[in-house]
Image (tube, rainbow, N blue to C red; front, top):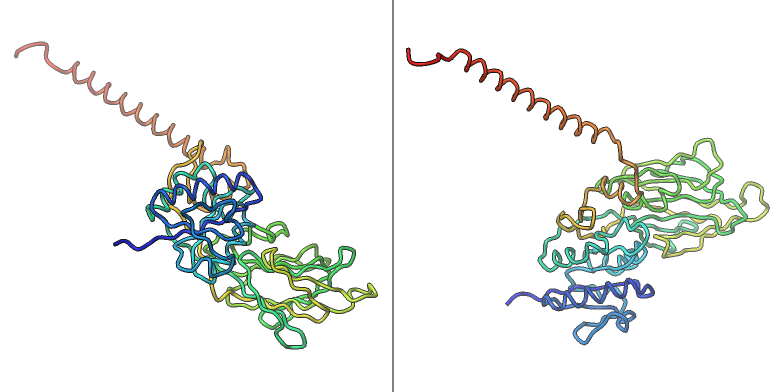
Length: 349
């Protein structure tokens, strides 16, 4: 008897398109003999008589083979809160704007579901960060992030005064709007908007990117994954006359208010987030690929111009050279054949 296979389906139910796609996914997975589970908060929109209903807690992902997420990156980050404790991989179908975390687009849906049913996918481990907040030396809050942890000013009209540290050593003091501590996965999210570098997901590193810093040295930095990064919120901020309050955001979802003197420490996460990667197949109207290499995904998501890239020119030149070589070889063969005809006797000797 084959073991039961369960897929937890999560969707952005406030978007009609996501609900339509999710219902198609639920029906197809059920028809394939898989058990489909949905969250109680989404059951009215997605559930059928054949689906399991689970509370919207980390227990929802227990014993599931996969979480299939329909929506944008925000929906996938929400789903990651359930999947990470259970060690369950996520597979996203993008209905958002950029969707860097998603594995498939709506036009890939049929092929993506078939590959899930066939078990034709691999698991990719994405680095996370663990975040702790200290006050007077005591840890008062711990949390985590897949994309980034950002320390930001609490009042729009006031600048934030931060002292940055790397591995317990002071690095610089910045008057700024904040700072982003990101993973390689998050390098294309908030850190990218703050001017940070794009880092390929398989690279193990921590990123630090200041937000609108007033300082001579305020460059984005990439440090060892074994490093501990820290930001300490200073009290009076550049003579503004009042204490500078700050806010810690993790993946834009979990918020912690920071009083002056608070210290935020960021280190490599103890538990990764698992992403399901489908086997590369041709999909979509333009023959794009599911699970395309990160370079191709970067080009597609940011619509980067590659027309006229010299690699294509090289290929055109190579094709031209190949054609010319073939024509030259054919000409040589014809010349040799003609010479042989001229040298052959006209009859019997």
